[in-house]
Length: 218
Image (tube, rainbow, N blue to C red; front, side, top):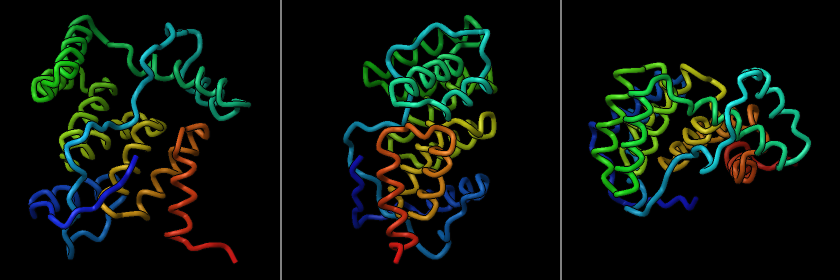
């Protein structure tokens, strides 16, 4: 994902909101003395999310088992297979009502009606606050709207409920990188890779940021 920095700054209120959210995640940058660079333009973008096709949930294997298998996966193909099963468990809806609302939210997104989709996800979260995927999808939609403060707030809720959520950790890294906080971006990316060593493009980001943040080895 290309990262661009523009001259126009966020309003102060958004800067303050972002600082508060990051403080709650334990990733507080020094934002009090500076404004954030503006986000990229209106091009379509999204945080890491589940693949389009998912396997049926294997109820005999819990998440702890699957995360262990993910770390031990010998190759990318095996890792993707395990990763899809983890996503399938995360996405499984806790009720018929939640399932219906999530389906309607997806339809709204497909129709480019993002505000409607967010309201539907609001309802899912109010109904089932422990349903991780509702928080994760709403974080993606806020990110698409360049509303980094709300996106980070939802990512925080995901990580409170599942600290191993590699999609949310990678998304956190992407946002930190876009607002120019490369140190926190590197930290988030490293956490994501510690959970899922086979994430696409993240190793390259870690290598580049390590050289910029920590310098080259002599």
